[in-house]
Image 1 (cartoon, rainbow, N blue to C red):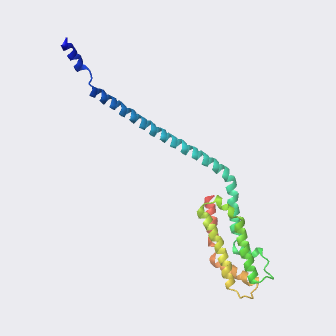
Image 2 (spheres, rainbow, N blue to C red; image 1 turned 90 degrees about the vertical axis):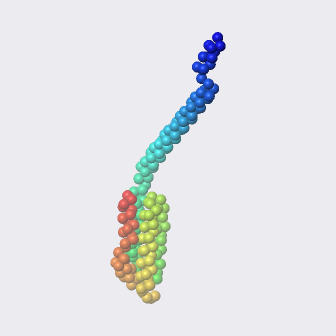
Length: 184
C-alpha cells in the first residue's frame, strides 16, 4: 500500500512546478496587458491625428473665403505704398518738400496700420517681407528729401523720389508680392 502512495506522490506536480507555471502565466498576462496598452495608445494617436487633420481641413475651407481677400488687400497696399503711386496721389504743386515728405510718410504709415491685421493670414516670412517693403519706401522718401534743398518745392522732391525709385526698382515690394502669390 505504501508503494501506491509513493507512485502517486511522484506523479503529482511539485510546488516548484506549480509556482513556475503560475509565474509563466503571470508573465504572459503582463505581456498581454502591455501589448494591449501599446495598441490602444497607437490607436488613440491615430484617431487624434485623424481628428486634427479633419479640423485643419475644415478650418482651411472656412479661412479660404477670408484669406483670398486678405492677400488681395495686401497686394493693393503694397502697390499703393510704391513711391511713384504715393506721389501721384498727392497734390504737389504748391507744397514744400518738407510738407510733402511728411505727408508721404504719413500716408505710408496709415496705409500700413490700416492693413496690419492682415498679418494673421500670411506666414511670418511674408509679413516680414511686407514690413521690409514699407521700410524701403520710407527710406526712399527720406533719402530723396536729403537730396533737395530746404527751400525746395514738392516737385523737386517728387523728381528725386522717382529717380531713387528707378534706381532701386521697388525690389522689396516686388519680392513681397511674389511671396504673397506663392502662398496663395
